[in-house]
Length: 278
Length: 258
Image 1 (cartoon, each protein chain N blue to C red):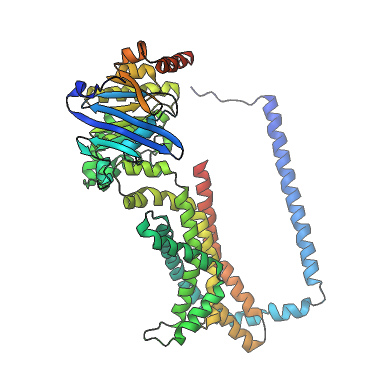
Image 2 (image 1 turned 45 degrees about the horizontal axis):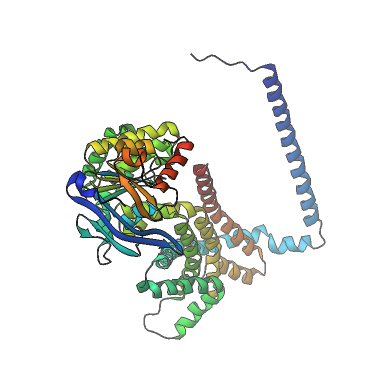
């Protein structure tokens, strides 16, 4: 049945034109990239202080020397990231759910969760970190966890405030008719949330959630301010020993490498979500 | 108003609304409405947009709280605030104009959600029953499809099966063909006709006058928040006594819908 279609002269002319246009665009993009790159290189390396900056920030020997201890510190960041991300996701979802509860009995829960998101989204992470890691041990309570754990809790507290609002936006984006359909089948409020609303809500807000996790990924580095030796703290120690700032660049590069897979996953999820809507 | 014809059709009364009142802010939608539906009876609600057809169905299903009056289901007072609304809804099936299928679940998961989560049926049993019902409505091959892969008519048939799977005492159909392309209306109406033949008690809000005439035992014309006129389809649609009913039907005929 299938007959091979041979394009008409008009279509052949169109194809040829589009091909020429594509080649032209690629050439222009390449030329423009080369020019911009050259200008940047000349501007930076030609600057009067370039030699000194290069010596104190891009010393290959110092970098190699600092790498093991910075990498060792990064392992702590990775573990913190996993713990804080899991903690903030769970706490954030819980707070978002509390805020959607209806009925006078739950007023304190709603007020509490609203107050929570207002406070922790407004409060700078550094201050939460200082209060938790330096203030709480000062109470001298028996069983006070280590500074590391307290710092991690500070990060979880702050980020769950953001994540709660993302979850809430997702929950509210699910159309009321979905709730009506579920309730009319005899599902309870909890069953409706669990089986109908949350699965749709989480799918919809997966891209912004992951984006917040990427932000969390680098903010776990702030724990160095409280004392634990993570990648940044390790770099700082190396800087103190060598009077050379290269270890910071090493730590920075490692953070970017660490974020890359997470960012790739975020992009992929976003793309998939966009495609599903199309 | 014509007297209650509810008891005459089936003997037992399944649904009984007395003095039902419902307003949304200043807008009084249902005003002292009385309506009965007998067992195995099919009642069609007709009336202009905003006459309260959908609101009445949502009130019966306890999706909306009524402001006054009572609704009884099988003699049980279901608008008593002490009644467990979830348990009442298990005995009533509702099908919506916009299908309201769960988009993140396959057809089979949509249908088996209530049997599995509400009635705690084992998965295999619930799925076997769902497949059986799907086969009956000609959708056996769509069990694993997702709602957005189906046509409107197919989605609405799935929604009807989803409501049927609970074996409800009463089915509420809310403009179930209004969102469908004309050529898909027939397959859904045929399914509802089958339900009637099986003896399902139904309360149907509809704009399809031909369908109301064909399938309903009784037609109720809603106007001003009450049942203004009711009776056998031939009488209400053919020789209406109320001027408002005549006016409404004239407009429907002018629009080519009867």
